[in-house]
Image 1 (spheres, rainbow, N blue to C red):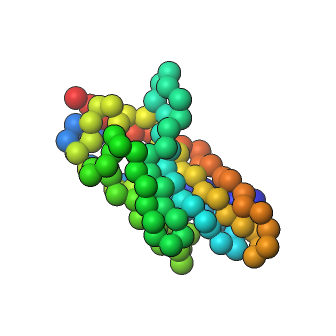
Image 2: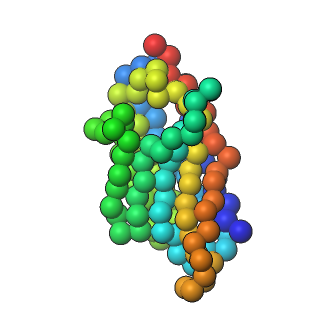
Length: 121
């Protein structure tokens, strides 16, 4: 079982910055994808950014140029630097990973508990 613990959410004014962090622990041999999703009230959960073990990244169009995802493979952590925040970025942000327990096991998806990001206009 994999545990994901997020931190760094909070309240910020529009135009401000926040940095989210997520640490993975538990039965981990390797982590494939690390990603951030978000869900605003009344909306579906959406992908924000993802990064592979090799460092390839992908971003939602709405955050390109403002958010940066990074990871530390040695520490099993992933960060999301969020700059120029807008009110529409407000949501609960979730950390997501796919990982293996052994070198030959299947990929297991895991979700964090979520961290609230509030952006005031």
